[in-house]
Image (cartoon, rainbow, N blue to C red; front, side, top):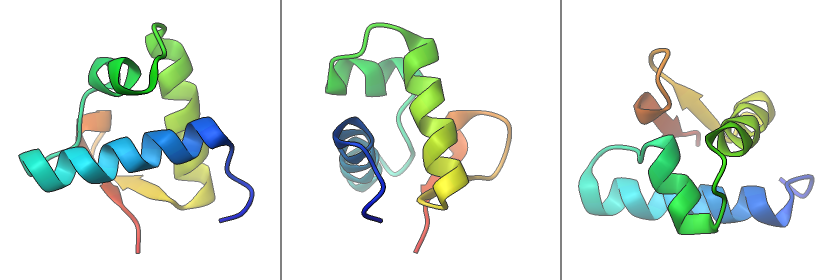
Length: 70
């Protein structure tokens, strides 16, 4: 996925690491703290874009249910 921004790459790395350590995805606020974004809406924007690109998917409405796509 060469069309991802540097911030989106950071968010993907954060999600991957968090799932590895905790067994579930981080919350929007936890992602924001990890990548230096204070606005939850900014994090949600990047997560929606990553979902559109097929990099992540959600099992439900909450971002905590997101999983890394293969």
